[in-house]
Picture 1 (cartoon, one colour):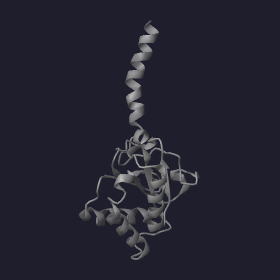
Picture 2: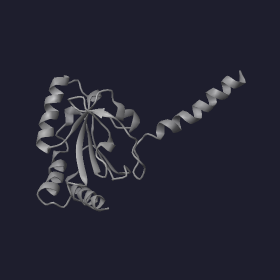
Picture 3: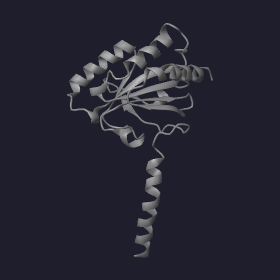
Picture 4: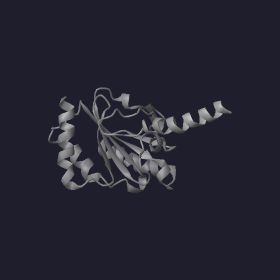
Length: 177
């Protein structure tokens, strides 16, 4: 009986800490994940070694919410060339737990975004990042991680136009480290 009580108490104290270790926190290493694209090819953050990552975790119902930010980042990479495209990768992860849209429609939306931004779109079918990263449901979250996978920024919801230059400046500096 004492052994059972000890086990229950130990679990009660250690499980919250174990769960909290997976949540994103600026300045801490981002927990790894494995997700697939539409063709079922598996990707992890290490699929892009040595690159600063901009990860857009998107509810398909809010897929256009941060287009002004993504357009500005694309301009900084492709036109202004202030972000080194060899040291940076932006991509999307579709949060399928936050929508009632049919998978075929979601794949069509994702395909349109992949083409527009010339990027990779992954699918979180089971809400893995809700658990492991603490991503909110029914939202749009942008996460910036450096080349060592340390979280440098977490932006939940719409990114204000006034914040865009500062985030681009941060990405630019991170790509030069």
